[in-house]
Length: 442
Image 1: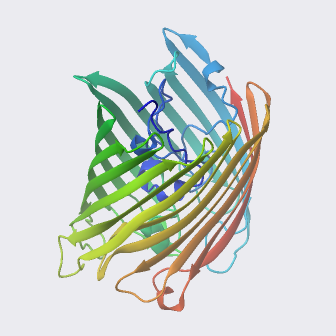
Image 2: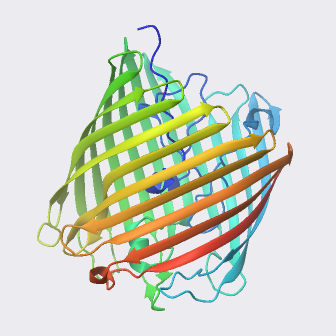
Image 3: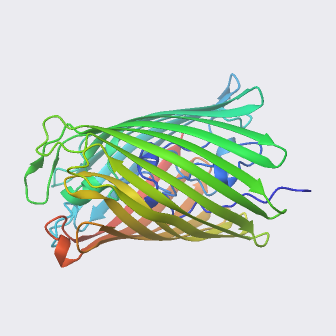
């Protein structure tokens, strides 16, 4: 082969399918050589990392000037920034009927330390404080610390990731659906990959660990969801990639996820362990220089340590993705992802999810950019009748009048629709958020 297939670029608009790795804000370092998409961690596309349900992590700077920011010393680049954001929410408590709106202020600061020459080493530290004027939401500080690096041993490439995150659970998580509100969470995470090539064949081995501690939160009924839940997850993954032409490659994936729950003090401590095994086969194809396509299909099998309370189940999983990158200023993607979400609840095996996702990012000028995304997730179970549909629309306009200043205005709309059979399980709601954000790079 003369050249490998161009890496598939499908990053925008897929953030809601990431689970807890996005909450950990583990973002891959910029590489001298692009990493094939089959071996990349999907990135959060949030342009403004503030506000409840948004990950606090390195922002997606569409102006591509991060290598000139900050201060270089001792072979490292230090990029500190301070930020202020104001936003108005029409329904911050996420009750079924829109309650009174409220205004919030977010103050946050971040520091990114990376190799000055663009190497894989990166450390990120972020702290934030959110305060509403009236409702008691988001008053706890948010803290994020991540470290990533890459080593080479005996022909193997070994990316390493470590993270600590005290934040809020994504609204796409099951516990947030059930409590109908954000839940305080602390996440400790680690990851190690081992990648190697034999000719054109690539083998990727991966290990992920996360310890997710969920604290208490107020529910829509005014009660407190008392919880000392801790969900310890180990994921083992093997991915084999074989090019079959200059523009097409076949990917085989096998994955095992094990969960151990510590539910001391909860009202319903069930399902102390569970295991989800997944196998998929997929293909990715570079149709033209600007258009990339990918698809995979497989099966997931869930086995519970309490089969008397939580039945075993099998689900079909897969995805269809298309990416369009006509220039370095524009990127668009559309995708459908069918998957499963782990559950710890009596009588329900796990959740079947189907997500449509669309994203568009465009740099209008050297100092002006826009991003738009839409996600719609349908959630159902094998054991309960009905469905839940979560949708979110997000749009932002970013302006960089000076290399040290980034300003943005954004709008998001989230909505949950619940069929009649599941309204005792979760409650519907809708909420709009209007936000303005100012970042200053020191």
